[in-house]
Length: 190
Length: 113
Figure 1 (cartoon, rainbow over the protein chains, first blue to last red):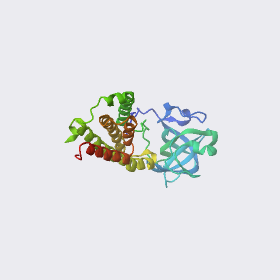
Figure 2 (spheres, each protein chain N blue to C red; figure 1 turned 90 degrees about the vertical axis):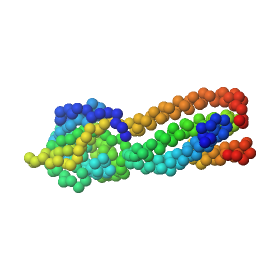
Figure 3 (cartoon, one colour; figure 1 turned 45 degrees about the vertical axis):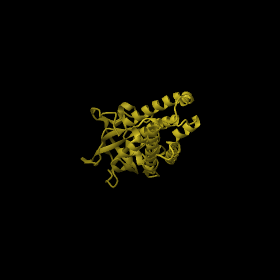
Figure 4 (cartoon, each protein chain N blue to C red; figure 1 turned 135 degrees about the vertical axis):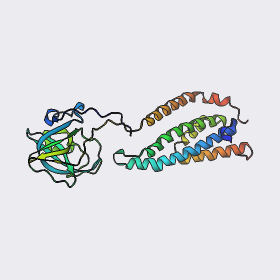
């Protein structure tokens, strides 16, 4: 698929609780921002069939009481204990299921799936953490956090095909009332 | 080659060629593209497979033009013309339309195709 959006210049990393809140949808301007936040993890979830494999996911509780869905590693990674600082990128919630979901498996990365667990404190969007600092050490999660580009569902030439086809069909329909007259003027055999 | 000739011979040849080509593209659409599209996870369909739908769309458009011209030349009634146009939407139907056109042309020319 062709992308219609280019990667934007990176803005400075920012504390998560300054740009997202639980009361409103994540503003589009804050998509793709690099964020950091100290938090403790709760809950254990897996998000299968994501772009970089199967993700280990948890709810990160910030010190101010807010919570955010965070991808803290790939399936099988060592879970950080206690308070840790997460570095990563904030993404809008996924809207399409990519796997089957149940109580511990998320069909998509969407905090709405955990609304009963997180409640009103759960922020919109989710974070893919690339690094976690804890106990004086910083570990890399092995995940990358590329900017999410705006994409269209089909290639551009398919749109052009639709345009040409529909105009042609419209022209044909306009000819229909004159069909019998046109037919009457045609010689059958040559 | 009749495909590039004028008159009923060329018009019939063009229609028959497009009926078969549209039928093959419909088969590819129904039996290859759609199963892959409908079972793809996260709409992950290879571009080569997506191209089937695009080519099918353009093919049908040319088929419609050929069928319209054939219907005029063969003096088909308006409902018959609509049936010929609609035949391009189903793979089997366009093959049936092709055979019917061939039979009509053979009857008109005394068996010559």
